[in-house]
Image (cartoon, rainbow, N blue to C red; front, top):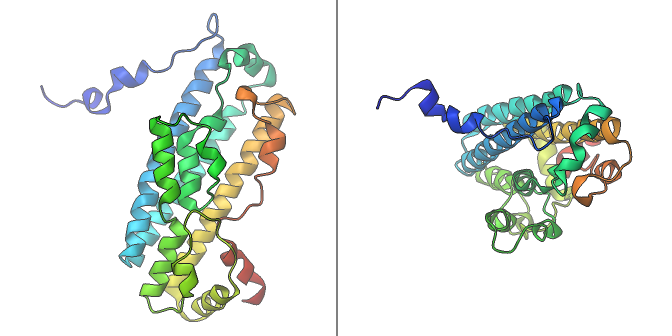
Length: 260
C-alpha cells in the first residue's frame, strides 16, 4: 500500500486520542487535552534536539550546535505561546471538568522532568514520583546518571583549548551546577576574544531565559485559572511553582555579566 499523508502521520490513531471524561462532554475539555498532548509532542522533540546538541558539542561542531540551539529556542517560544491559547479558557470553564482529572497533573510529566535533567536541574526526589519498574522511572534514572548539556559544553570548551578547571570536567554529573570563579574568568576571556564561542554562550543564555519565561508564564496561567487552590494530583499549585522561578540553569553565564 502506498504511503499517504494520513498513513504516514498515523492520523486515525492520532485523532482518536482526544477522549474527554466529562459528561456532555464539557466544551473546553477537548482544548485542554489537545494543548497538553501537543506539549508532550514538543517535549519529545526538545529532548531529541537537546541530545543532538550534546553530541554536536562533544564533536566540537560549533556551526551545527548554533543551528540546533536556534531550533530549540524557536520550539521553546512555541511552547510558551501555547499558554495564550490555554488562557482563553476561563476559571469556570476549567472548573466544569477539573474534578474529572482526579490525580492527573502536569506535575507528572516525565518528559518535562527529563528536559530538566538534561539541562542540569536534577532532583533525586523527582525519581520517586514514578513506579520503580515503570518506563518513566527507567528513562529518568538514565537521564539522572548522564552528563548534562552544561557538561557537554565544558568539554567543548576544553577541546577548543580553553583552560576549563579539571574539577569541573570530572564533576559529579548528578549534582547541581555550581558557579565557578575560575570558569568565569575563562568565559570572560571568550567573550572578549572569540566571537563564535561567545555567540554560543549567548544562545545558552537565551535557552536559560526561555525556560525561566516558560516557568513564569506557567505560574501566571495557574494563578489566573485556579488562584491558590492546590493543584490536581495534590501538588501545591501556584505557591510551589513560584519557588521554581529565577533559578538559572547556567549560573556562570549570568555571573559574568557584571565583569564584562
